[in-house]
Length: 190
Length: 190
Image 1 (cartoon, rainbow over the protein chains, first blue to last red):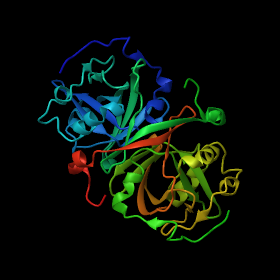
Image 2 (spheres, chains in turn red, green):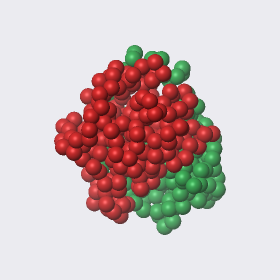
Image 3 (tube, chains in turn yellow, blue):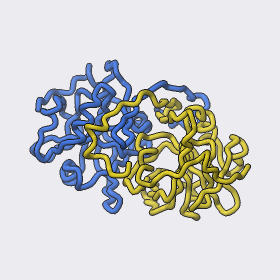
Image 4 (cartoon, each protein chain N blue to C red):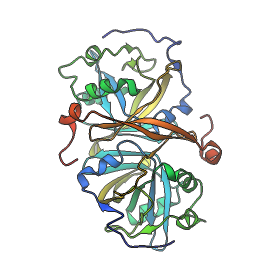
C-alpha cells in the first residue's frame, strides 16, 4: 500500500451541505477502514442517504471482514468509484481483507484523510470521511455521519456505477434537469 | 382515481428472491399508501436494500403527508417509474396529498394489490407490495418487507431514474455484465 499526502490539486474539499448529492443517486461505493494496523476496503451497494447534514446508512455485518474494523474504530471512508473502475469494484467485492491486501492487489492509492484514520482512495471521484452514529444490529444497518469530503474536481470520467445485484451494473446515462420545478425541495447550500 | 383489476398480461408476478434487484441500483421510487379512505403517493429517493429476502429501508417522516398512513396501516407499495415518467415523479414529489388527489392529478392508474391495501401503479415498470417491519424513529428509517411483486414485463421503456438531490436526475445508461466474476456473490434464485 502506497501512502500519499492529500493533494489539493487532485482532491478539492467539498462543503458538507452538498455531500448527500454524491450518494442520493445510489452509486456502488468502496468503503475503507483502518483497524489500527492495516487499511482495508469493501464494495457496498446497499446504501441510503438519511439526512442532508449529511448522514448515510449502509447495510453490512460480520459477513464482511471490514465490519470488525468499522465496529471497533467507528470510522470509515465512503469512496465513489467511476465506470472505468468496474473491475476494481468487482474484484474488491469478491475477495476478503482477511487474506488479501486489497490496496496492493487492486493498485489503489491510500491517501490520509483529515478527520478519520481510514484512508481516502486517490483513484475515486469523491471520498466522504464518516463517523459511525449508531449500528442497528438487528437490521445490520450502520448509520454514518459525513464529517469531511473531497472531490476529484479535475477528473474527467465522472459516470458512476449502479449494481443491479445479479452481476450486472448500470452506468450513469443522460442527466435531466428539473432544478426549476424542484426548487422548493432543494435545501440551501446545495 | 380510476381503479382497475390486476391484469396478468400487463403485470407478471415476480419471485421474491429476485425483487431486491429492482431496488439495488438506487432508482427513485413512488410509494403508495391507503389510509382507509384515500390512496396517496409520494416520491422517495432515499431507499436501500437491507436483505435479499427482500427487505428494504426507506427514509421518511412526518414531513411527508403519506407517513401518517404508512405508520397507521404499516403497509405500502414501492412502485418503480421509468424515464418517461420523470415529470410525474417530480410533480408527485412537489405537491401534497393533504390537498391533492395525486392519482387524479398525474393520471396514475391505481390497481388493487394482492396482499396490501395500498394500490399498485399500473404505469410503473414494477410494483413491490410491502409491510412495515419496524420504524426506527430516531433516524426516520422505515424497514419494509416485500410480500409480493409484479413486473410490467411487456413494457418497452425500462430505464429508471436516479435523483441526484440538486434537482437533476440521471437516466440509466449502458449495462455492463460481470455475472461470471460475481457468480459466488449472487444468491440462488436471482
